[in-house]
Length: 339
Image 1 (spheres, rainbow, N blue to C red):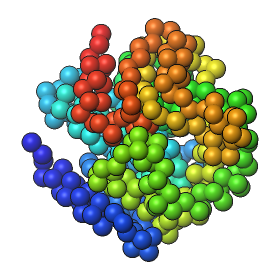
Image 2 (cartoon, rainbow, N blue to C red):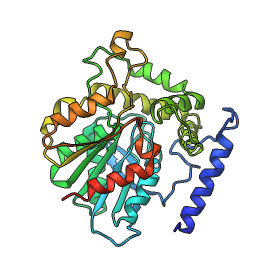
Image 3 (cartoon, helix red, strand yellow):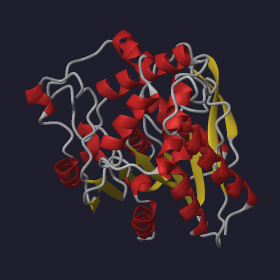
Image 4 (cartoon, rainbow, N blue to C red):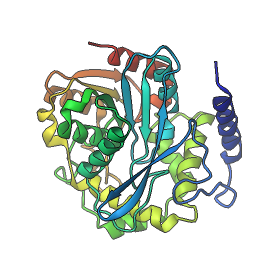
């Protein structure tokens, strides 16, 4: 049964989808630099921290169990073109199962601060996340990371293994080292110019091809609206600059070589039709042909991680938790319920 706040959010999401579909850039919503104006599915809180000499605010949702509490916590880490809000179906499913669910927006993303200057590293983002959980008095949790959040979740588990009850990687990027495979390096300035040119239609086309295996549902428009509204809002230069710094972090800080060092129970959940590979848009054809084969990468990396479990979603793309939430959440609950 939906609560009043959840009913209101679904109505807002439906209306946003209706107005976004087929809308021109001139009529699409524009959100603030910290995603002001976008409606989150659950109350949004902010954690104040000081990092690299700068006062920052980290947005997050903290959802109490709606079913009988099992005393366990789950942390959901979003990807590069996602936010904590895009976990909404998984949040709802896990809260019903009795979990306390934390869904943060990392610094540089979504509802969190976009610093003018910041040295991004997965270690820094993991440290920020650990500080948030410490502030919330959470000493151990299942860490679930999707896409870039999978790289962050891996780094978090390497840094704080005692705090991780289980690691779940959902179509994580970083299952290969693109630079070592021949993808050209971009300067931060080149990434910045690329990010300034992104349009809502480009976002939609890319997501349809990569995230949803060529399919499209009206509810996906909500997430195009979210990302395009942030990228093309009044804070566009600041958003694009942070995005460029983050892409440089992703490209130059591989976790691939450290999967063998993981010492926590780990599950990979892989949509096998995914083809995500950072920099593939500028890679030579012979290099591009070798990249992003998740039907192979999932198996390969599962073999590198001691004791890892592999759960595949045949024919699904980069975001199985959004492409088929019911199937994904059913499998995830089973994974989290393992001893």
